[in-house]
Length: 112
Image (cartoon, rainbow, N blue to C red; front, side, top):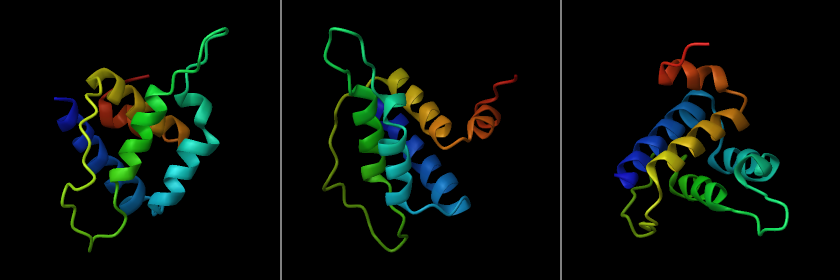
């Protein structure tokens, strides 16, 4: 189930941010993973930082393709067994990092 969710999320991210908004895949990855890294890393005092959400976001961007001529053969596919709820949270955080919270809420049917 998590793989299906990640695939749908990847398609939405590609369509919205690359095709509609015009971002390049590498720029999108840089904005989310570098400039907004604290959103995706849980830090608890006295413990090692938890990079689970950061790693999920990075894997989503790895599979994104900003070139329509490339065919994905699944060669780089990794089944990491991600939790569905965690994937959905990362999806939300990506929209937050890109200052697109309102679009996320509309898309998800969340009313203010």
